[in-house]
Amino acid sequence: MAEHDEQSDASASFLDSLPELKTDERFLFACNEGVPCFNHCCSELTLPLAPYDVLRLRRNLGIDSDSFIKRFTTIQLYPDTGFPLPLLKMLDGPDELCPFVTPAGCSVYEDRSAACRAYPLGRGTKPGPCGTVNERFFLVQEDHCHGFDAGKKWTAREWIADQGLEPYNRSNDRYMQLMAKVKASGEAVSERMATMCLLAFFQLDRFKDFMADMGVLDKVDIPEERRIAVIEDEEARLDFAFDWIELVLFGSAAGLHRKETC
Image (cartoon, rainbow, N blue to C red; front, top):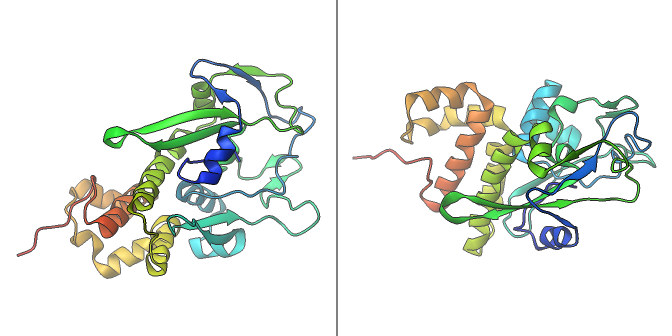
């Protein structure tokens, strides 16, 4: 897939095997019904889903997180961090089709995953200084793909903007930074914490109830405006979840502070 982070040795090796795309370098690409291989890449996928992917897909389908996870994913763990790794479950059958592909194209196109949006662009990321993110771009050119035969020429930035990747990248970068911090600690999270991460990052509807039951928002010092947003808006809740898990794991988080107690 076209979206990777460089905290995984396997991901880094994969990206290093691809041609790197320089900042102003352009590539020719188009994917539409007129391309001979249309839909051919939507099968036999090993497609990891990031928290923001699940948020958008679940909301598109109008189902709760438990139903989405049970029906559409297989949950594994990142070996170096212990964080949950949902993989999109392909349909049974010889072609192992994506559950969202139809003859007319993607049925969840407006909320498709970051990896699907990014293709054929690969993006490698790692933490930079002072909370920044260093990124590199690569071109994934597979033999079966005819998207490179015609179309418009794009820079990486133009492709990202055209495919609506900005909110995906912002959320995925935050997730990458948190996992990189865990990896740097030299110890993967416990099974219990992995379960909490699954709840906080991938089950935002249930996480809302958990926060209410445990009084989580009463234990942290956040502006009232953010408190309301966390309750009412899933994007804000996911952003809070990253800060909260970091606070739980490391005792501090740049975007969150515990309330002072007497």
